[in-house]
Length: 148
Picture 1 (tube, rainbow, N blue to C red):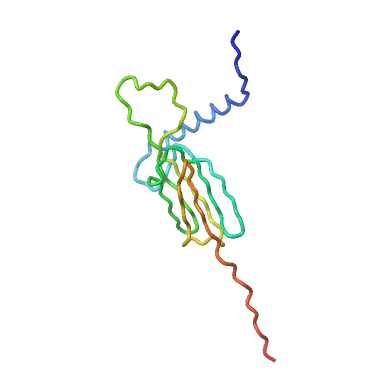
Picture 2 (picture 1 turned 90 degrees about the vertical axis):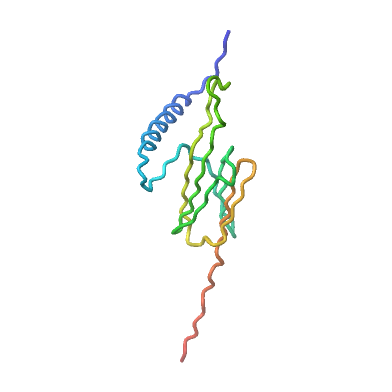
């Protein structure tokens, strides 16, 4: 007797993945030199805030940290990169199933006014990109003396 695990949402996930692939391939086909950036996949991120900083942790397994581009412009932090598939040999490459997504990724985050764009730092380790965005020192209210 063969037992099969029941996963009620797997069909919905599969439909969503297929729709994303169709949309991405249609958009990627329009490589006309415009400044529209498309993504083959989107890394998951965690964003946390404490008293001194914001921290973005992005899952980018298989991506060399040197191949990730971070830019900051007009209050928007952009993370771009690409995960490449190992070189394929012609013929049988041994794969029976490929589920990991490969290709370029692109994420944008609008930063609050309290973020110090000049002091942003990033490091990649164990497939996680960590971007640290310090907060600017809060301006203290200025007391103005009233003359009499």
